[in-house]
Image (cartoon, rainbow, N blue to C red; front, top):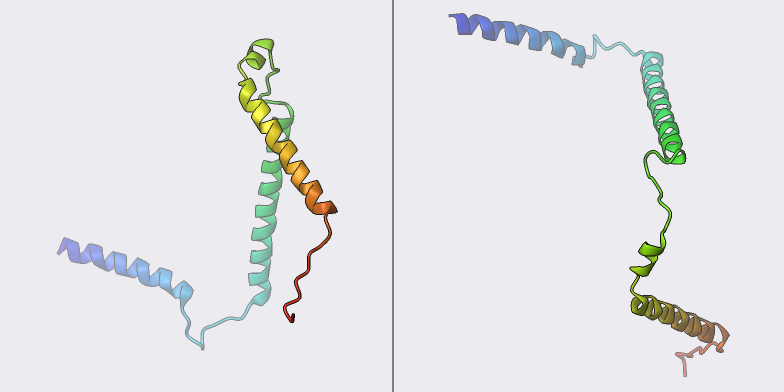
Length: 114
């Protein structure tokens, strides 16, 4: 019996909540101004929150609180692998040479009708 009373209370609350979404054509009120005001207010509120968060993020990065930057010391420079650095530099020079070669070479157009 107690379970039946409890389910009746739940059904009553559910029906009360569902009346808000009732789509009965005779009971529908068209209040577009209210709806658009709610939508506009929501997006203005979200934009203000985003602007505050981005400003706080900017100032925390600007003050180096969020992303600290440390200066390079001579010890950290000695840990670099010189062979890998030279290999990377050679690859960059080779890419620059190929780019200049392609840039300065004449265009080879193949005529498909021949």
